[in-house]
Length: 615
Image (cartoon, rainbow, N blue to C red; front, side, top):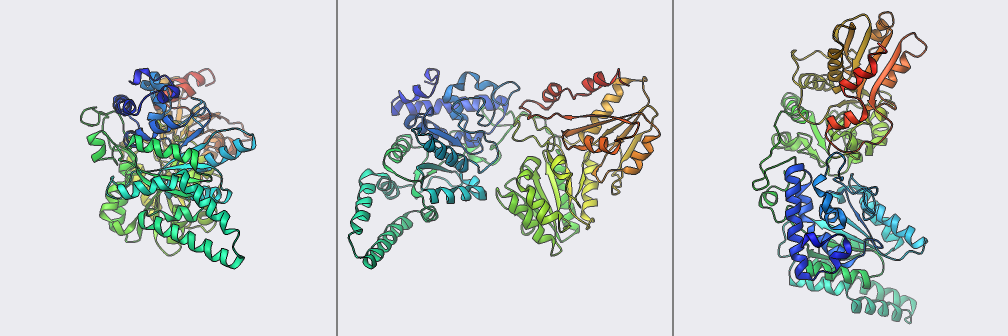
C-alpha cells in the first residue's frame, strides 16, 4: 500500500479499509528506519492515524498543518512525498527529524522547540484571511507542549480573535480508557454536527427579540446549561472558557472516527475548535508502548527487541546527575530543577532519591529560571539543568530575575556545542554569546568528567552571583589527573612554549591538543585549558603578550560573540595576532558531530592545514 503513495493526493484516493492497512505499513516503515538511524520513535508511532486522517480530510497545498516540535510527524513526512528518502532521516545530507519549510512545501512551519504551533498557525490563518486565500489552518500539539505558557498565550489570543483555527490536542499521557466511550463519542458528534451549531445560532438570533434584561438571563442560563452538560462528560471546560469549541475526547487510533470528526469540524464549526485526541505513545510496538519514556528519542536499536546498539559510556549528563546526588547528600539546601528533561539531563536518580528537592516544571524554561531565583533568595541552592538551546527561551529571566540580583543560581547547560542528528534547532552553539554579555554571571566549561565535578563543587560554595556550567552531549572524557582545584578566573597551563599559544575551552581544548600533535616538532606551543570563559584569566593573557606572536582559540560555540572574540578584543592594539576557530555565522544542519565539524572546517586536521603556513 505504501509504495502507491507518492504524495498527499494518493492518500485521499484510498478507502477507509485501505487507510488502516496504510497506517500499519507506515508504522513498520518508522520502526525500520529509526532502528538504523535513531530518532523520535514513540511519539511518531502514536500519531500515525492523526497524520493519515489529516491527509484524508484536508489538502495540505491549501490547508496548512503545523506540527508542534515535530517529534510526532514522521508519518506526515512519509506520506507527503518523502518516503523514498526516509532512509536518510537525521543523516548528513538527508531529511530532517523535524518539520522544515526548506525541505517540503507540505511543512507549513519550521519547528523543533516546543509550544510554538498554535501561535504560528494563528499567524498563518490571519495572513491567509488578509490575502483572501481559501483553506483551513490546523495546529497539532502534544499534551506536554501545553505545559509551555506560549501555548496558552496563543489559545487566549485565538479565542479573542475567534478565527477559524483547528487545534488537535494529541493527548498521550493516559491510556485509552472508559472516558472514550459511547457517551463521549455521542457528545463529540453532537458538538461538531451542523444541526447542533445551526440550532445554536438560531436560538441566539431568536433571543434578540426578548427584552434586554430577560435576554441577558436567557443567554446566561443557556450557556451554563451547555457548559454543565459538557463539563459532566469532559474535563477540559477551560478551553470553552478561553473561546474554543471543545470536542472530545476521541480515540486517536480509530481512523474512521478521526476522519469523521475532522471532516465535520472543517465544514460545520465557525471559530476556533480544539479536538481532544487520546493516543497511545509507541502504538503498535510493544517495547515502545511499555517504555514510551525511554523510546521517546533513541539512538539505533535492534528492531525486534528495542535493545540499544549504541556503545555505552558515562555521559556528561550522568556525571552531572551523580555529582548532584553527592552534593545533595552533603548539603540539605541543594535542589534540582529541570524543564521536562529529567532523563535527558541525568536527573532520574536524583528525582528518585530526593523527590522533595526535585522539581520538573514542565516545558516552562522561563518559570524554571525565576522559580530558581525565588528559591535562591531564601537560602536554597538551585541547580537548574536545561539544554543549552532551550535556555535561550529564558534569556530575559536570566538577566532580570537572576543576574541583576546576583542570586547564586547554578545553570547546568547540557548539550552545549554541536549535538549532531537533531540539527539546527538543537545545537547548543549560542550560549557563550548570549550569556557572556551578562554582568555578574560566571561561565565555566569542563574538558573532562573530573573537571565538571570540581566545577560543581566550586559552584556549590560560590554565593556572589549566578554560575553557568556548559558541557557537551555524549561520553565524558576521563582526565589523567585527580580532581582539579577550581579558582575563579584561573586557566590551566598544560604545556608551556615559545612560538604560539593554543587556548581551548571545553571540547575545544581536546581539539587544541590534537592539533598540536599534528605539528610535531615544527613549533613549540603553549597549551592552555580555559576553564573560565568569564571571567577570563587576564594575568595569563598578559604573560602571553611577551611570550608569543600568535594565539589560537578553539571553541564549540558561535564565533560571533564567543570566547575567541573576547580574547581577540583583549589583544586589540597589541602585537599578538589571534586566530579563532569555532562555529561560523550560519545555522548548522544535522549529521554526526565529526561530519559537521569537517563541513565547517574545524577538525584538528583542518585547523592544522589552515595554520601551518602562518605559524
